[in-house]
Amino acid sequence: MDEKRKLVEIFVGRAERDGYFPDNRIARTEHRPSEPVGDLNSFETSSHS
Image (tube, rainbow, N blue to C red):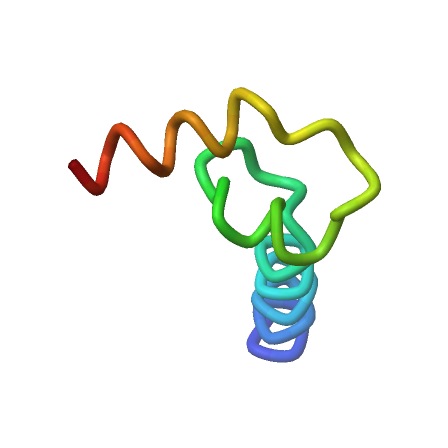
């Protein structure tokens, strides 16, 4: 079971880093610049102000 859990953690961490989770908006803008990020940029600026 430990080995399977380790694989799951690696997969989840990789997915998080690549921006597959909608919560991780900053990572999505970093790793996928080809996607339209207009609303993501407005989200970032509004959260900083």
